[in-house]
Length: 337
Ligand code: DAH
Image (cartoon, rainbow, N blue to C red; front, top):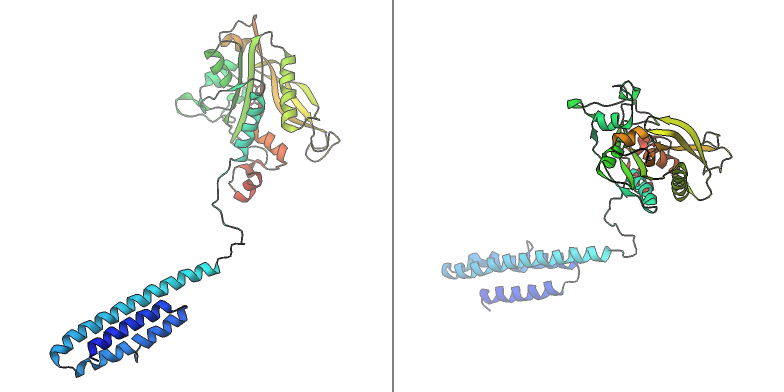
């Protein structure tokens, strides 16, 4: 057999064996058998020197090509093994590693839940700007010019004499000016105060205000709405207490306490052993506010209320530090996902 035939025979034989190799180890052995230092194809290459020059050229080229081809085939076959080996190690009974999906932040979720309980009794949402004017944040709401909330110590002022709204209540005159009674609105959003950050206070937090203006609206309507909200949100067994209070934009004004849902009013750490939790401020819209918005206060009356979202969330989920809500610790936040 000529050397050229020998090369072809070896190549065919090697390819057949590569095809039949059933492990990476077998493949390695074959590679040594054909292409190793003492391998069959290598041996042929070594004898090239004994051939006459013209024959050496053609046989040499053919042998080198066969050598290269076989090397490629070994590489391809090895790749096949490394992937099938990966598949063999795959354990379908292990729990999967699904993609991590985001969730709604606890503060946004609670804010949405508060709004939803009011949608159920016919309220609709309105929002206002974070950067407010003194006009809507204070003046329209009957704050006197020397009210302490207007102080730099309490309010962030920005360029152009404007300020970061200190409550969501300015949405009330903004909407009342635009609409005609009956107006029944809930106003979720961000608020800002120049506070020392502590376990209970933050410079940026959220509120939900609500108000209803129509003919013949009374304090009884306010109580009805708030009782419905507190029971839907905290639990149906609750008791509510209306305590007299003061806000410049409501008259009369009240603060609402709910019986502590943790101890049922007996007294515990959450309610500081009083049996009650302060939950929101409310009242009948001051006639001056209605007049400021162009309403006849003899004909129309209204109620209003406002609550802090973080406060409500902290009570509901027994969170003892407001900062936990904002420092983006995922282990904390995922508890509420
Ligand atoms: N704006 C008040 C605050 O930030 C909360 C409030 C009290 C809102 C009574 C109201 C209300 O609409 O009627 O403390």
